Amino acid sequence: MTFEELKDKALSLPYEPGVYIMQDKTGQVIYVGKAKKLKNRVSQYFQDSSAHTPKTRKMVSQIDHFDVIVAASEFEALVLECSLIKRHMPKYNILLKDDKGYPYLRVDMREEYPVMELVSRVVDDGASYFGPYGGRYMTQMVIDTLRLALKLPGCSKRFPRDLGKERPCLNYHMNNCDAWCQLSRSPEEYRTRMQQAVLMLQGGYAQVEQELREKMEQAAEDLQFEQAAELRDRMQAVQSLGKRQLVTAGAMANTDVIGYYQSEAKACFAVLHYVDGNLLDKDYEILPVSDDASDAVSTLVKQYYLARGAAPKVILLPCAMDDSELFAQLLFQNLHKKVHIRMPQRGDNLRLVELAQKNAREEAERVTTKAERAAGTLQLLQQMLSLEKPLHRLESYDISNIAGTDIVASMVVFVDGKPSKKDYKRFKIEDLPDQDDYASMHQVLTRRFTHYLAHDAGFDETPDALLIDGGVEHARVALDAITQLGVSIPVFGMVKDNRHRTRALVTPDAHEIGIAATPAVFALIGRIQEETHRFAITYHRQLRSKRMQGSELEKIPGIGKKRRELLLKRFKSVAAVKKAELSALQDVLGAAAGEAVWQYFHNHEEKQSCE
Image (cartoon, rainbow, N blue to C red; front, side, top):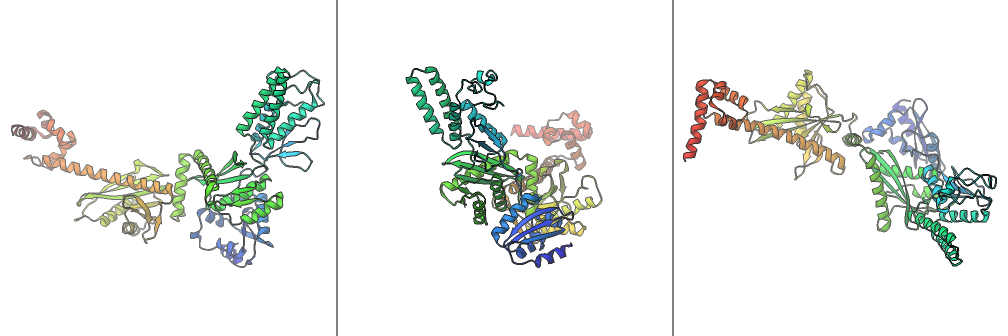
């Protein structure tokens, strides 16, 4: 379908809730969305593209056709959206990488010798299930930790089938197992240990510890000191396990706190799990940066809890979730459990959310490289400036002078967010009778792009944007200069605040784009502005210093412009000329002129010393 056909179809949709399914020309589903009113939501995609983010523009450009499913209610639309996203995994939807479910720990106490085992899902088979946990590694770690604390078997033997068939293995000799494979061991004691494991999975560390303490004290009273020592070691292992809180939050969690943060290049979705006010575990996942953080949180929360098949009593969010009540209703329908979804505004819950946000930030920053951060910053800048072309090369210009003398300009180049000093250029302003920053800027841009059109070496690269030190008038002058040459490049002025820092960018038609609220972009533009100013003022000082140095030589009779240039070229400075030997001066200027210079400085110094 053409763009106009897509637009007409969108405008013909009903004002009803439902889902829309965007597909490319191959029939691949590339995006699934939910709408309260299908006509309003879907038609937005086919309006003025300047209001869209680059990601949305790219997605819309790939739409060949779309389907809609009208739902009986907004709740039904939410259920359908979640189901379709899980089925099609569309490339433009925000997706958790692992949406296949989370592992559980299963124990069936009806067996004579129950075991702890890792399973992928909960089955209604009468066994007890714990979790879900953050992954197979975490689940296995929980099993191993409990097994070692209670000295339960970790081998592949099955009881009672393998009882008494072999001698105790290495685990027994390493004091990691109590040799349950031997006929001398009591099945009742084995079940007692497994019941203690189940109790700890439910958070009952204190109860297990108390039971072991009572048995230890009784064994000591009965003078069974070896047994008492064994019970003491097991009790200490349980104490240690309780302090480390290795039982990660699952179905028993009271509160989950969501954190979400986006660096310039990476995003992180983090979940802190709390049980009875104690932080037990953290899940997190690194994701691509989203156009809308609030929408990302809403989407990820739905995927996270529907995939786990478990949820806490309370979920605390860092931002509003428009359909939180509907999602809570869906969780109740799936889990038979009432879940409260809140966005705290103050108090302890707000501090918990801030902690989750901090965790998300730390993880995102940790995995973001300098190159990714620079690329992300340039992408943010591109979005803020509403440019379609990526910002690979930026050129910045500044004028420098004092009281209209030695007027110079600098051209500084940043490539992929880093200064490219080999491409820097400097210009000496020519044939201007008075100080005129606008005329100077017009001249510099005209000269630079005249070289560009002539394909002159060092000027043949095309910048993706021009940054002009100054306000809207400077931007207009720069645009006028390149337009007269038939060159089309976006131009922006760098507007300074009262502390001489770039606070905004401005277009030639006076549209101001604030950058202070985006720290990464603010820092980049500030760095470019400072580097451009530094390069300009350095060149200005060099010219001024050279002119001031030359003025001392002008006082020497018989030393004109050409001889001054010869002296400065050979000796680099007036100070070096003063110290030069007579023979060295005569080598450069000849006998008479060299002696005149030598006499001037030495007679001048003698006169000063006499005075």
